[in-house]
Image (spheres, rainbow, N blue to C red):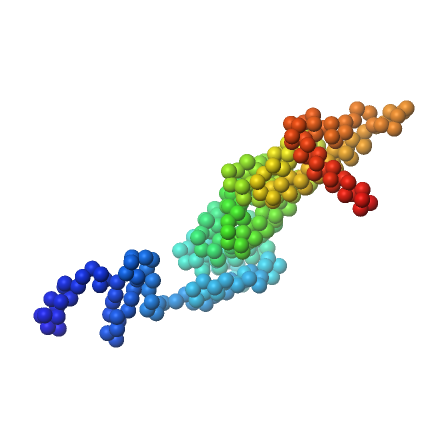
Length: 327
């Protein structure tokens, strides 16, 4: 190259930094001149190999990688238990998202086919699942969500000591805008409510019923209303119908319809339990009325403010009328 050519290269203006010369001597733009996000238009130096991570019929494409999600009932056993188990921690904590997804699926397989063996290290596995739940990569996040659901189904109350970190992340993920992540998180929350004892779960859910985020409140309300009936009649009475009634009344005025519908469902459940319990009281010999009983309406007015009592009576009386019509 001549001395003049070298001198010319040294005085290229800053505006020329947005271009480069490829092997064929052609100018190729690396990023827009206005300084916006880097957009390389030359072919990539490498590509992610095509993979499949099974989870049902849903398939997501990330770069050249193909992520397929498998439902729990379609998962098969791990081919080499010792190799899988011995490398599980390193793969769950890997910087390679493909390895993380594979390891999360292994956790799911182990929870189904080797429940006792996974239980030995479950306390150390859950924090790594929580880490994946926080991942900005949707494939990793959704796989971690499905792993959480399988853990709830397999271990029930045994996860209660580690449930706080899982619960907060699942509530956050169920409240975001990515629909397929949101739906998976809600399914995991429902699995939690049907797997963990309500006496242990309800205290964990209570703080989120008053969360500042209305979407989190809504998802927590749904879980709460689904968990209460699992207490049974005696369990609800022991927990306190009046306490649960106050919770339902407060949610009836929430801004999101999901919260209001969950509160309506809870109120109807409480009314049924209360009326049935009053009907079981012994009766006076000279009267058909039960002894020392109180109507549902009087109970609501005694335990709630006038406005909240009216709101509860409105939704429960409507249901009662509908039941009479259908009957």
